[in-house]
Length: 221
Image (tube, rainbow, N blue to C red; front, side, top):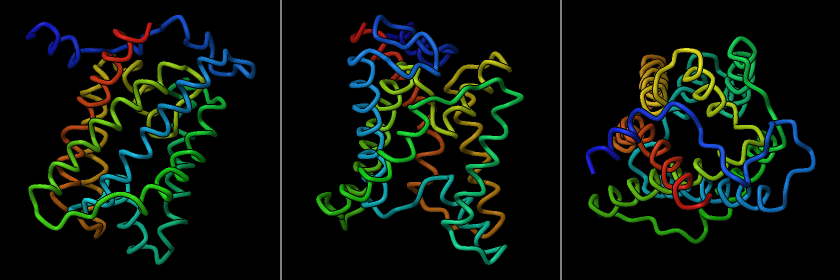
């Protein structure tokens, strides 16, 4: 068990499975690759929605967008767009490549979140809110495992995570955790609102994504 935990925490490379695309620009991937890509993105969006409806703190990146909105006077939608563009520009020195997964990431996750908000519970007791955040983080991690292993292009923030992991030779869990903590710190200093769910997410999401990559790599080859 300890060996597995250490492997998850030190995982540096996204597994390549039989159904993984050979390259990100693939416009005619296998049907099974598209299936797992879409399935992973749906899980990701559902997990994000669980965090929203738990109502004890938004994601670290939302805190950043919120803080920028407070400082600049722009809407959160505009600051979200600006941050996404900046993150994508950072891909170039990190040698990250987009693909159809990058596009579907932006579309599907948003749609799934919007639809899920109507059917998910909005717990009032802290224990259930806490459990919902943990479940949401685990689902996001597993969803990330599917869609990243499909290798059809990550979303802007996941691409930054993967690129930094490759360039620094640090584990995915470590890089993601540092990224999220840095983002929430900057967002907080800019005036963004941080909740207990935000802190839990920032600390746990790196491990969750690495766990998702491990589980999908082990059981879906």
